[in-house]
Image (cartoon, rainbow, N blue to C red; front, side, top):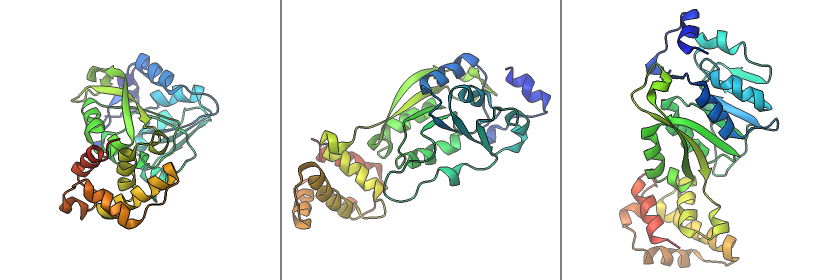
Length: 269
């Protein structure tokens, strides 16, 4: 598919302000689909389908593809997709958003997408509560650094770079190069007996609580799950006190990346 010619056919001018940068290299699309390791048992979510260049290839291998595209001007492309593709012309946020403190499984088990840049960070926060089998994303290179350094993201995921994609492979050409990443879930800290990781995840999943309270509850729960040991609130408080964490951080909500780093260091196995 010649993206530029196809867009001209329908008098469509991509809008960079809406993150409309289209991958135009079929070889890279094929690689993304290969990385997804799809079968007819898979239900795939794609956000920001655009011309459906990637969608069409996903549909050949997956049982079902759920697609969101907020801009209806791409309808001529998406109406030509196979019958196993369900297209929603709306913002994906209400569909993907998860509520509560526990992980949930949705209809889809894999997320394969060239995400709109403005959607990436909120979607990553949402993924912390999603039970999934595989997430393959094409993201700007500069966001890869954020995945690694963000205290929340680093508490749940490891981004494995599968492919580097030069910016010239897109139309129009964006400012930055991109990478295809496999978003790997970190091992269950209960199974690996990793108290520091357990507490970092627990803090984020209970971000409405003060750090001192989520750490106390997290320690009690961890000891029970891992060692079948009952720990009192006072005992948990003493453990926290021994770690010499700044009082201002303990008395705050876990919004600062600093607290995730401190908990990682002070509660290291």
